[in-house]
Amino acid sequence: MIKMQVYLRDEQKVALRKMAARTGTAESDLVRQGVDLMLEKKVQDSEDWKTALQGAFGMWKDRDMSDFDEMRERVKKRFKHVYEEN
Image (cartoon, rainbow, N blue to C red; front, side):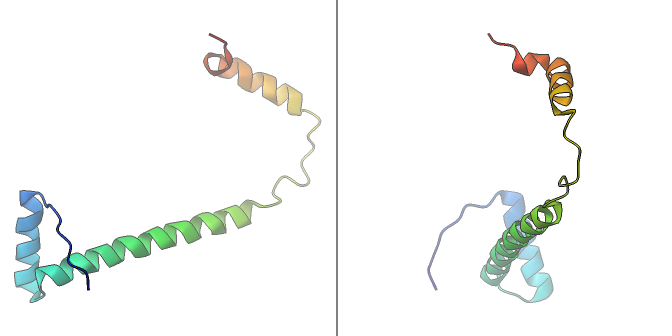
């Protein structure tokens, strides 16, 4: 294991101390569990993004794009503040 120092807000430290007392788990173990949860969530978020992208793949393959220029002009009118040159 690697030793690391972190700064906690007062309310975080109080909550951590109470949880450690309530669960009988060392504060350091609770901090490691929290880091593990955060890392797992990041991995899951990454997988969710990939799944959503795969689900969207090909969804416009049968779309008639003959009106694409008209759609683009409607968007430009609606968001003219974005398309205006300064």
